[in-house]
Structure formats: C-alpha cells, structure tokens
Length: 554
Image 1 (cartoon, one colour):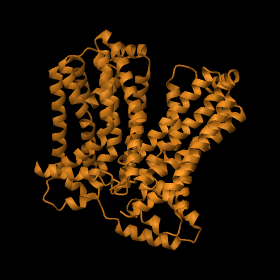
Image 2 (image 1 turned 90 degrees about the vertical axis):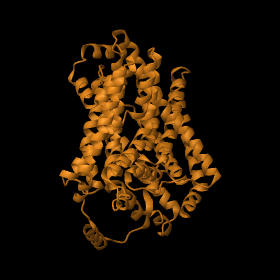
Image 3 (image 1 turned 180 degrees about the horizontal axis):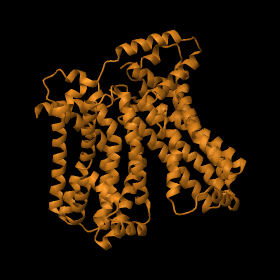
Image 4 (image 1 turned 135 degrees about the vertical axis):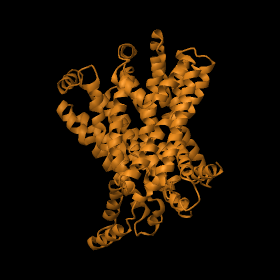
C-alpha cells in the first residue's frame, strides 16, 4: 500500500501547472479563475439542479422519484465514460513516466491502482460539481431523510468509479489481445468509434431530459420497461442502486452500490495482474519509421517564406496530431450534425419551408437572431475548439523553438491567431451561409452577421493566445493533457461564455422590451467588439512578448 501511495502522490503532483513568481500574473489568474467559476461551473450547476428538481418534483407523485435522479446520474456516468476513455488509455500505457517506473519492483496492480487514481482525480473534477448540483435540486424537490444525505455523500465521491473501471478493463484487454494500438494515434482511431457511439447515446438521453415535465412523467410511467431504460441500468447498475438509496434512504441499496464499486475495482486490479504488463509486448518501437520519415522530409523540403512555413507548421500540428485533430479541428465542422439531430427530435415543424415562411412573416426577428447569434456562437466556438487557448502550450518541450527560429514573436503570435480564425470562421460559415441563402434571409443581415462574426472570432482568438501566454502548460506527457489539464482552456471558455451571455441577454432585453431598432443593436455590437479587439491587442502588445520571455527562463 505504501508503494501505491507514493506512486499516486508523484503522479498527481506531475499534473499541476507551474506557478508564476510574478505578482501581477498571479492576480490575473485568480481573477480569470473566478470568471470561469461564475460562467462555466455556475451555469452547469444551475442547469443540473433545475433539471433534477423538475423531474423529481413531478415523478414524486407516482413514487418513482428515484428515476429522475437515475436519469441525471446516467447522463453524468456517460460524461465520465466519454471523457475518461482517452485519459485511461493515455495514463495506463502512453505517459512518459511509465518508462521510468516499469524497471522498479512494482506490482502490476499497484501501478494500475495509482494510475487509475490519477485518472479518477482528473476526470472527477467537473463531475463532482454536476453531482452536487443535481443533489441540491433533489433536496429542494423532496424531503429526504438522514440516510439520503449519507448516500448523497457517497454518490458525490464515487459515482465515476464504474465508468472508469470499464475504461481500464477495456484498455488492458485491447492492449493484450490485439495489435490495433501501437501508439497514441492508435488510441485515437479506436476511441473515435467508441466516442461516436457514446455521443449518439448522450444526444438521445439529453433529448429525454430536455423534454417538459409532463412528457417526462409520461415517459417514466408508461415506458419504465423500455429497452433504453433497461440497457442503461444494465450498463451502469450502480446508478440504479444509488438513486434508490438517495430517493428512499435505503441502506440495502447503498450497500449494494458500494459492493458493486468494490467488485469493479477488484476485477480491474485482477485483470491488471493478468494482462497489464503483457500488454506492453504489443507496443513496438517506431524509431526506424521516424528515421525514414525524417529522411523523406528532408528530401521533400523546399525553401519558402517564414510566414508560410510557420503557418504550415501550426496547421499540420493540429491536423496530424490525433488528439488536437479530434478535439480542436473536428468540432468546427460537425456541430451541424447535432443541431439537425436535435431539430429532428422536436415536435414543431423545423423544415426548410417552415423556416422560409417564418422569415417571410417576421424578417426582422430572424435578422436579430442571426446577427446576435453570430456574435454569441462565434465567441463560443472560438473558445470551445481551444485552438487559440492552447496555442503556446502545444509547443511543450519544443517551446524554445519559438525563441531560436528567425521569426519575430509578433508574426508567430499572429499566425497562431490566424489558424484559429480560419478554422473557426470556415467551420461556422460554410454551413450558415448556405442556410441563410436557402431560407432567403436579407442580404444586409447576412453581411452584418459575417462582419460581426469576424470581429468576434478575432477577439476570441487573440484573447485565447494571450491567456495561454500568461502561464502555458509546457510540461505534459501526452497531447490530451494540453486540453484536459490546461486551465487556460477553461479560463478562455469562461470569459467567452460570460461575454456571450451578457451580449445575448442585453441585446434581447433592449430589442424585445425597450423596442430598440435592429440597426442600433448592430451598431452597438460593432462598437463593443471593436473596443474589445483594441483592448486585447493593446494587452498583447504590452504584455505578450514579456509573458513569453518570462517563460523562456524556465
């Protein structure tokens, strides 16, 4: 046990980002963290609370309030499975510390247990807030007893255990009995199929939870034996028992819940003793391939301008690195799929003819939502794809490359922003522009929306790079860590969401209640976004180079 404890402490400590000695930087980071909590964690918490409250409040009349808690917990479990898959694979087999730990006299179950704890620590941060928020909604909707509070404590701490155990067992079986995964790229290819399936389940489940209270009651009362509910309970049996323990204060269900979690961990550690070290035998060295690739690269190299070379380098890193491609590039181009799925699930008519008819009858309302929506959506997508907010952290151990190449910092900075801008802008308007044409939206409205979108994406990109320059995460084992363990990504997203919510709420209030004309709303947005861009450009010019220079001293 002492070996497990020592390994766990060392692995968790390696996750933390380096701390700046600059007082101004520390204050800035604290302010931005407060913004993240206010505009990311608080909205998510409110959403989970209200959703749980609505379900439990209505289902309690039929004495099946445990199903309301169960559906929310199923969503959170899928969330854990969705984000834990790559984390487990990377931590178990592809983190750089494995090379140093393997020669030690460490048992397989000790190493897996410590790695699992680290993965649980990383994956459980957001889920804790979601579980607590859901339980708050339940407590307001019901009048639980003492045992319900006890069960809630266990749920808050241990709910993601079973999904992550699934990921751990699956990773060891795949690595032992197949040769499909030989490196991190293989992990991404295999996980892409699994994640696509999980996304589909998540969308279906979200549709059920997003329905109104009356539909939810009808669903649970009439469809409790539906295949979907049965399958979800079979996949995550712990959710069924902990939900009953919370809803009815059942000690028996709580004990069964704990026993299932203990059994899952024991089974994973048993599998580790049998398969974990043997799984490394299928990992092959690709040193020769790298040498051939380098030789081929040198033969094909041609002289070009610094701008083109650096732009190509930034773009290729995003496209050729599976983690970056999956998490940074793909979201810009697949978002319409989810929009179409959600629209198809709605009861109202969302056909092209219906949208054209609505635009004909109320063109100014459509123009308002297009103009304001383009600003909000552009800000959110720019932060969501995190291309800008991890632009410097992506350099990692090659950070010194930024210092020695004959390319000015200003140009490097602008190119990172340009890559973020192009991928985001193309991803948004390659779908929105044809949609506007098909719906016959006024050309003036479309042009105004495009102009505002350009300003929004530019601001979001410069802001993201600037935030990442303050304290970039340059020490990481795998590319996924740059996204999952980099607080700058969350900071940038929090600021973007906060500005988006403020812009959307204020514009809607003035347009709907004060009856401000759409022209004035558009001009106000132009002025606001222009000022925001000037501000972030001023901060970049004043502190950007200094931030990078301070990091060079590390």
